[in-house]
Length: 102
Ligand code: SF4
Image 1: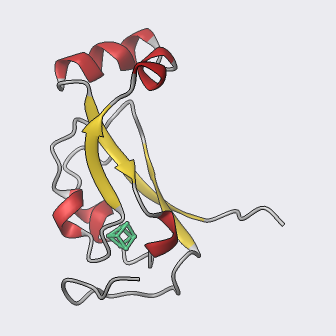
Image 2: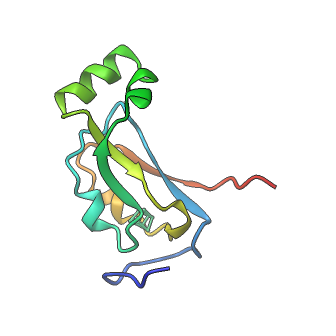
């Protein structure tokens, strides 16, 4: 695990919470990526398979925003600090308690 790039108000150990990104809201603007001290989030292009899974409206929105959106690159690193939630101008991120299969 990498040390945090900046101080975060972490309230959970790693792996308890995880961000969920709403593909209907994300516009790939990207402030969530530098906001996260643990490099949990990335902005990248959608794969053809991911585009195929979108609704027509989501596909149109993705096209308008360069077929990019935020993804979770390292869910095990999230500390549930909420900085990404605050950074997103589209209110596309929420935190959930992670469900780990037994
Ligand atoms: S809540 Fe968001 S900013 Fe904080 S560690 Fe998790 S992904 Fe990163």
